[in-house]
Length: 353
Ligand code: TXA
Ligand code: MG
Image 1 (cartoon, protein in one colour):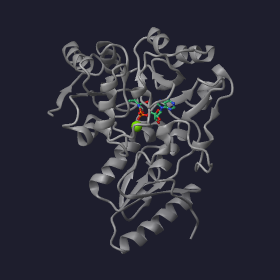
Image 2 (tube, helix red, strand yellow):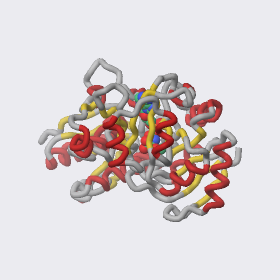
Image 3 (cartoon, rainbow, N blue to C red):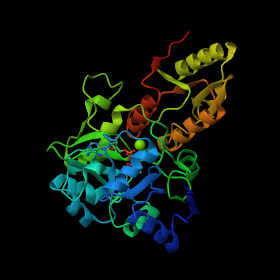
Image 4 (cartoon, rainbow, N blue to C red):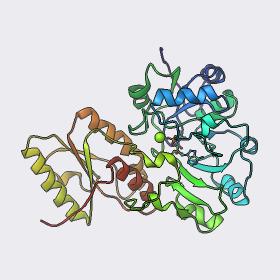
């Protein structure tokens, strides 16, 4: 299949391109498009065959449910069987935006879209291209991140093309996304709201509106619990680079010393080493391919660059990657969640020697 690739002005989307893409979606086809979090791979969420095509193109396990993207609050009432008052409050505050909520589903949503579950994940994205496309495509667009299953999520159209060129009908290139990590997922279907995937909308932003919000214990810290995560997708080793990635924790100076020692050892043994450093630390390293992920003064910059850096190290063909650890507060909770998953949870504590 030839993939149609169209560049679009993300502030003022060209209506002809949106119409062409919307028609493809209505006919059951696949269109990748930008959102404010990561690029999504869209299909009509209400057509079983269309959803099934997403799994095939991504190589995604069929028990991993999709998020249904909507462009109007009224659409939620069609696909969610119950909308708790807290969910209404969160929608008022954060939609359109990087928040996904889980509800009991209505019969309108096929099981092919929900991975066989009786619940449905719903999000109203903020990106103008995404909103226009959802409207043009019929109002209910299933969209996982537009990467091959297991690869880092795409934050630029080039990343989507690397993984899916020739496997999808159309790719809308809206440039680089703003946030760079997938939406926060909150389960609203059980009576006690729980974060299943941390993201840009943090626990600190949710609690003032709806009180205490638990974090799924299976995804906290190193995930040392015997319970499976409640979002089926969180159990897979997602976001993985090809190299062996280790995260180094500890105080700033000890982290740098430890990464320097490890990269010197691996370099001496003939391996190619990549180092994920920050603006603050990048000049301290002597060996390896050093990349600054952003500044600790503005952690949003770190979130925005994480997936692109993992892909760059893949391109460069490095054997080992050492990453500095980041604070687990605020957006840092989402950054560390994705970084630790990419590392297959391989973490070491820095020491001074
Ligand atoms: O930011 C985002 O959410 C992006 C953009 C494209 O909107 N989409 C995204 O989709 O990250 P995906 O498929 O890569 O991740 C969806 C996650 C998976 O971990 C899946 O298991 C979980 O949402 N999920 C979906 N429906 C669920 C449900 N009914 N119950 C529990 N988890 C669910
Ligand atoms: Mg994904």
